[in-house]
Length: 160
Image 1 (cartoon, rainbow, N blue to C red):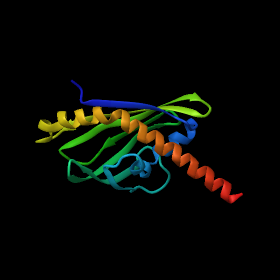
Image 2 (cartoon, one colour; image 1 turned 120 degrees about the vertical axis):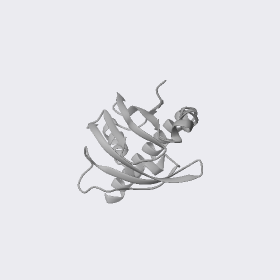
Image 3 (cartoon, rainbow, N blue to C red; image 1 turned 180 degrees about the horizontal axis):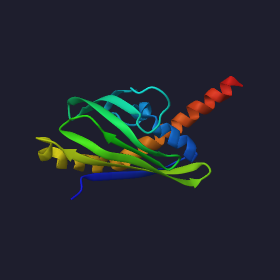
């Protein structure tokens, strides 16, 4: 059995806006409460090879994570790989984006878990928790992406 989960939501934002929001890993705390802090550690624009480092709290345990963007196909596909060493890692993950209309985008998130050492024993528990949370996680992404769109729209109005 593969240690994978996925979840989908339709976001009331154009696909280009949703892609830009999700490609910027510094937005992750807006929809993932486990992320306590995150920052981009590479210089320049967000592109393949960009690294994000984060501090994450799972099941009471705080760990440090490092993810690299491995594929960016604007505006439909984002892929990443975890480069850090933890008891459970995400060797592959990503978002698939699909234009529903000019103002709506379907997003599907998917992650693959891999256990290391003791993590091999508990990866199934982590996977079951992620599968159970996947619909709510997708809805948190939807809410954050839509709120982000409202924030940028308010900023544009304020500049006028």
